[in-house]
Image 1 (cartoon, rainbow, N blue to C red):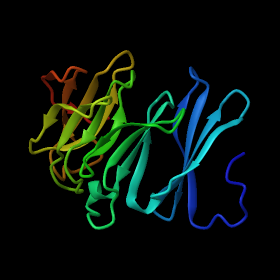
Image 2: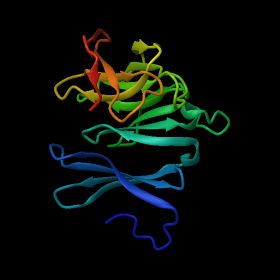
Image 3: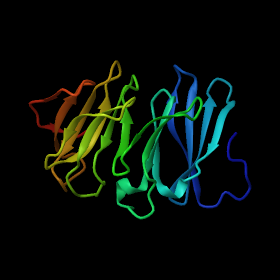
Length: 204
């Protein structure tokens, strides 16, 4: 069990990642509006393998975990416009030892990791709801931007290629009406090359 303290206040604990293959789950506690603690849990017996309090919690907007539970990204509050109080960098960290893998500009936020953890899909400019999205693909090891999207549409969702470094990125018109608007799909490979599918498609 985690978070057994009696006075938990305005908190919620949620799964950031769950990997049966690696026998790991990542749990993140959000206190009020900030990610404050991270647990690494072994699924087979529920053992807590690691537990860390996030020191600069109020400077972050969220924590994103890789699907296998080996990496987390601590996204600076500056990515969502909190320029005055955001962390000075968005940090990708290895959970096994807490080491920093790479740092990104604080105006960038990690959206998700590829299945092989070699690249990450990111927002490359402060995120503003209801406006066009500025997206990128970055090399996790170096932080180098391999691909960018600066068109007029907004992110509708994405899917990681289960067998490699690619993503399928779904884009929709800004403020598109209804729960299932038409989307275009861009396939982005781990080397930064991209292909726009014929489409459009109905958003799932």
